[in-house]
Image (cartoon, rainbow, N blue to C red; front, side):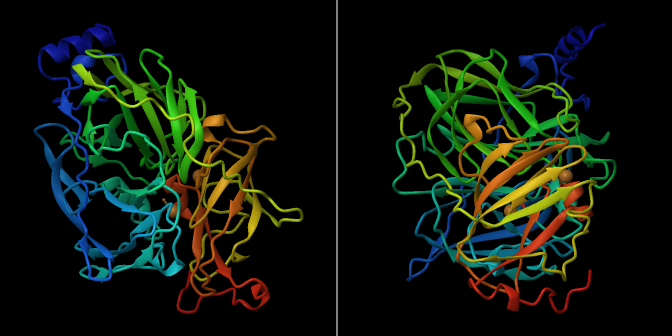
Length: 481
Ligand code: C2O
Ligand code: CU
Ligand code: CU
C-alpha cells in the first residue's frame, strides 16, 4: 500500500488522526477535520489613568493535541498556548504575570520596544507562586509580536510544553487591511512536535544539533486543522513558534498571495509572492484572496538546510459558498521608513561557529557583552561558519542590508527583529536602538533555535547614555554563570 492509499484507508477507517500518525504529507484534505482554534482576545481592565492591565497566568493543564487524547500541556490562562493581547500605539499597558508552574520562568515580549527591566528576559525571573507586573507605553508601529518564556537554559522546554501567545500592536493610522479578529484577521501559530504514543509532546528539546524537529504540525495547537473563511480576503498573522523548524509556506495550488508585514511592522506596499520562508521567532503578515466554495491547503515544503526537512500540509482552508466582499488591497501600507546607516556607523561582528556560543563565548548571565549608546544606528554583521542559525535582537527594529552581499527578497525587506542566517553565510543588518537606558539591565541577542539559545548561543547588551559607554560595569553583580 502506498502512502496515499494508506491515508485514504486510514481516513475511511476514521483513524487518520486517532492513531498518532504524523501530519499528512500527501494532500489528503479529508484528514483535516478539527476546526482551527483561534486564541481568544484577552480583555484588559482599564484603570482611571487609562492603563490597560492584562492578566496572564502560567499554568499546567490538559489538552487534546490529537483528538480524544488529553495530555499534559502548559499554557497561559488555559491548558495550551495563550490568549492574544491586543493594544494600540500610545496605550499604557501593564501585564500581571502569575507563575502557577512549579518552577521558575520568565515571560518575554518578543518584538516590543520597552525598558530592559520590563523585557522579561532571563534576568526577570518569576518564582513559582510569584507575580511579575511589567508596565510600559506602547510606542511603535503596528506589528505582530508575541510572548513566550525566556528562563536561561529552559526556554526550549517551556515553549515546547505550550507556553506562547500573540501580542498584536495596532496603530491608529494603519490603513484598511482586514482587521476583524477571528473573522478576516487570523493568527496562525505554527509549531511542530513529536508525539508519544499517548499523544503528548515528546523528545528532549536539548538534544541533537537542533533539538526538536517534529513530524506533527500544529496550528494554534491543533493538529490537522481546517478553517472556514467567509470573506473574500483574509489577513493571516503567521508566527513561527517552533523550537527549530523553518517553514517554506505555499498553497497547494501555488496561488499568489501578498505579504503586507514583517516582524516589526507593515511593509510600504504589499509584495506578491507564492512562497515565504520563516525561521523560529519570525512573523509575517499575509493577505490571501479566496474564491467562494473553494478549498485549499496551506503547506510547507522541504528545503536543504536541515531545519526545513519534510513536506507537510498545515491547514485546510474552506471558503464559504458565499463570501462577503472585502475592500481591495491598499497599494500603500505604511510610509517607507528605511533605517539609514550614518557614515562611520559602528559595525559589530558576531560569529556563529557551533551551537553554544557567539564569538567563542558561551552566554554568561553576569557578563555584559556589548554596550550601545541610546538611539544609535549600527551595522551588526553576523557570520555563520556552520549549519543553520538565526539571529534575534531584543528591543530593536532592524532591516536586512544583505545576505552574502545580496539584498533580501522584497517581502523580507521591512522592519524585523529576527533574521535567518543560512549555513556558511554572512548577514548584515542595520539596527536602530531605542532610547531607554539602563546600564545595569541587559537585553539579549541570540539564535532563536531554542536548543542553541539554551545552550549558550546568546549574548547581552545594555543601552546607555551616549558618552558613558566606557564607564559602564561589564559585570552584573549577583549573577554567576
Ligand atoms: Cu523570542 Cu529572546 O526571544
Ligand atoms: Cu525577543
Ligand atoms: Cu542556532
